[in-house]
Image (cartoon, rainbow, N blue to C red; front, side, top):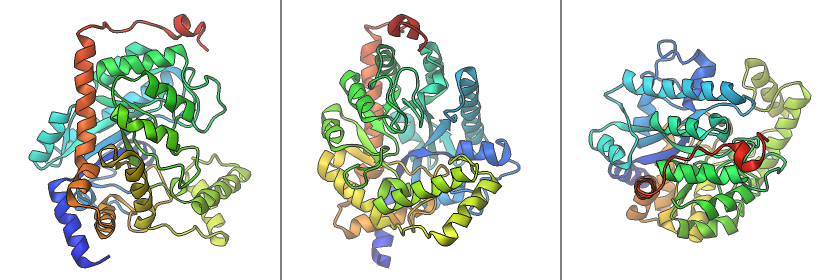
Length: 399
């Protein structure tokens, strides 16, 4: 890309900075330092350990970040709830630690206010319905603490919804799963359909009265990975008003990268490690695999190909960005960390994207979808009381 395109990209991002739909820094900090912000000072350069620090967020033109308050899906019951609460506590502590850089935001207006004040709006998204332990009261409590989206599943099914990477059991959503979606609509929490099976996507879109999001997923037509969005689901998104936020994860982007990752995961498993194990021993095992099996190359153009396709299928008003930084290890060259967004924007400018369209991609669509969800919640709360339904009542058992 030319210096002129990169300069234009920086100028665009000054006006309409990036709203990133998904960053796993909280979990990375849990593993790296037990959330200790003295041990890992995010006001200093952390590129040796993390994809994210405050200076690189500013360099990258990030104006708002949905921090993932994630708990691994092998945690269950109250352990998952507690881990999610610890993640929320970290995000709130982080914003309090750096009030000149970060500002907690729970509404679209608060996102705009943070941007006007020159701070990065910090929002939260719970990654996986196991975080509520099949309790609508817990869902409401997370919302009161500031969580503004919930991904219905992570890599494993929950009792009321099927994951994209597990064996189907619910056939999409159970009756309780539908009630979860309705209650999310009522309180104003965005329904996130990344990680869920296509049948769960379809079921949630049929039930939801508010726009949904895909916080970090790509186009299945380009890369046939179960975590990506099928065309028939994408086709329903404009009528719903939702937003598909493209991820930067290698194996969602390119078939060759998908196949390489599957082989690497199998090698790691054969050597006694879980594929999500990032201990020093497991990391060394992956490095051993890579010495004889180099990664297929990825660039910002690979991400731009998905964005071109998504724009063609759903329209410019229904796409965004959801990197999965600090939750992925296989990233495109030029998008190695949070400072890389200008490289992607320059690529899009070079492809003929207009600056107003890029502004929708980076900022306006994400703000609008949250504002629309807030409007739906205001309407529903005038006529609908909080649901006290239980999974036993609606699904016949605790499943």
